[in-house]
Each structure stands twice: as structure tokens, then as C-alpha cells.
Image (cartoon, rainbow, N blue to C red; front, side, top):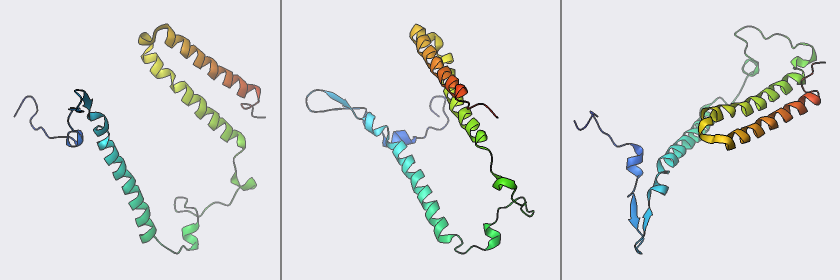
Length: 153
């Protein structure tokens, strides 16, 4: 038992990591970690992509080839599906427009949180940049409001 750890095992980064520095033959030292540091990420990405491709191929090979009418119907908790309402069961476009506007403005406002956390470190420059950002968001909001994107008539 060395130090405070009971068991020390190498992690993936230690397996792929090369020497920290090496000589280029001209008396200068070059860092070897910059390229080797990405090896675990590349291996993990390749494994994830391989698993996704394997899953799709196996589902295609093993999955059912013929479907019957019961398999193609919508499943609604084991009861008979309700008849289609008037208008084909479609929602008015205002619902989708409101949802998209909410997502856009919500994502923009989420950028305020990191700024609030690092406000002291950013100083006056950070304040001016965030004021410009908020002004841009308000201009976009005013544009949507003026175009009638928020009206339900």
C-alpha cells in the first residue's frame, strides 16, 4: 500500500501516453503528449461507432421481415385506437412556432449562466459583451413580437 491509495491501476491515458518530451535531433524538445492525449478519445469514439453499426446491422439481420396489420397499427396502452379527430389530428402551426421560439430563446438565455459565474473575472469587457448579447436577444424578441409570432388569433 503506497501513499493514500489502496490500489493503483493504470488508466487508459497512461496506456496510450508516450514520452512527455523528446528531442528532434537539433537540441530542441518536442512534446509527444499532444497527439497521444487524444488516443483514448479516438478509441472510445471508434468503439461507440462500432457498437452503433453492429446494433443496426444485427437488427436488420435478425429482425422480422414481414409485418401484419396488427404490427403496423399504433399502440395505445392495449386498447383499441381512437378514431382520427376532425382535421386529421393535426395541431395548429402556432403550437410548433411557439415551441421553436421557446427553444431558441431558452438556449440563448442559458448562455447567461456561465457569464454570471465568471462575472468578476471578466471585468468591464465581459459586461459590455453580455449587454450586447442581451440587446441582440431583445431585438430578436421584438422582431418576433412585431411580426405576430406570439399572437393566438
